Length: 113
Image 1 (tube, rainbow, N blue to C red):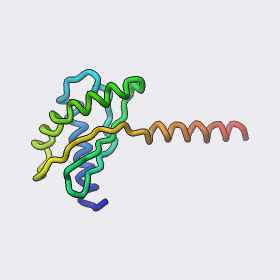
Image 2 (image 1 turned 90 degrees about the vertical axis):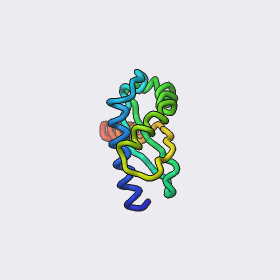
Image 3 (image 1 turned 135 degrees about the vertical axis):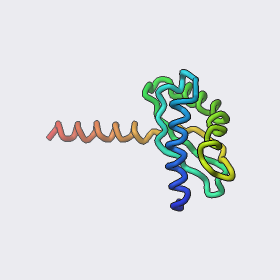
Image 4 (image 1 turned 180 degrees about the vertical axis):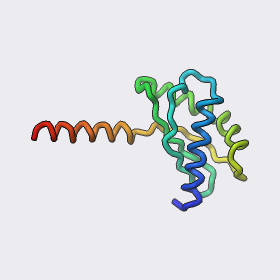
């Protein structure tokens, strides 16, 4: 990934987080945290990775975010100076969950010793 795309991903992460927290009125999206944004090299698609505080609602939150993607995209167009706004696709970020699993395994190994 180029430095320009990486920088743009960080800008998008902050901007989407702000829009989700302040402007989206859907109650299902209340406890969402945007963790990263990967943008394609031609700026046509962006994968937005998110986590949710309430784990049981993962599918419901994903559907709500993807339904609100047009609204979020419109708000981003006003916040980020870019010629072409990419299509947003929201994907649940399992890296935090995976990290917690690894941490538990390490703790169990340390308890055995």
